[in-house]
Length: 174
Length: 143
Image 1: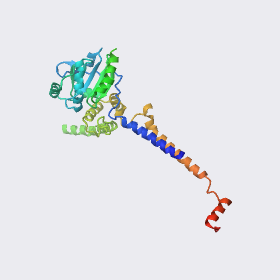
Image 2 (image 1 turned 180 degrees about the vertical axis):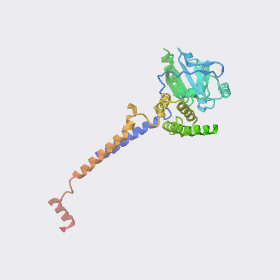
Image 3 (image 1 turned 90 degrees about the vertical axis):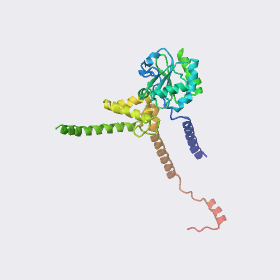
Image 4 (image 1 turned 60 degrees about the vertical axis):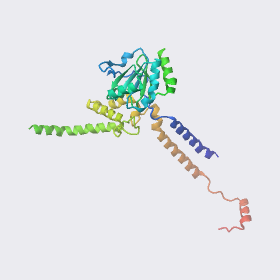
């Protein structure tokens, strides 16, 4: 009897590992940037291209940096959520318009609404690389000291917003 | 004369350019494309891979060492960007695991073989057994 229990135990262990593995999402690569200062940049604004914005301008505020593009399908999914959030005025949301054409981006905002306090233009994706962007949309929660506290890869869902981002933002504001 | 100089410069710089191209290629093969995760930067056709290849090329041209370039990407994308994960506490199981399994399998094999060798040979029949056999099968020929 005992000799049959061993293979069974090993089999169950393997099943356990594989079952746990199924629940992991390989697309979600943990960002090494969490807990680190948000990389500095100076980029022109989408709507006023003669003005520059730098994350340092947001010192003292807890804010969201949302990486978006008009060509990005899942940006459309999360967009109503961002518009809604901006109406409530809980957090300033800033956009990083990633590898997009200015006119497409403007049209997109006109069509779907503009939740952003402002958007900056990262036309060649260079700043995206500094932020470790690989799957637009991505969203960073940045604290008053300019440290990245949370990164969402892919579209924000209502559950993620309610359970992760908003509670964390509220805690950071204190 | 001008042509000669041009050809001479080309002649001497070509091997250098080839070396650099090869170095870039080797670097790109060590790095993972984050979009199509089972492809290297060298093989991937994703746009991000193109951007990262550009970064690699620029940094090679700027005289950065391979380690510096890999470190640049690891700081942004994490260890996952390296096709060959570094050896550290979180990856120890990954690196040592197969050898532990191999050792365990080897040890099991040796134990099983030893046991088999030390097991007694076939047991001889006791007189009682013989009587039972002869009763059932009839008198046995002792060859």
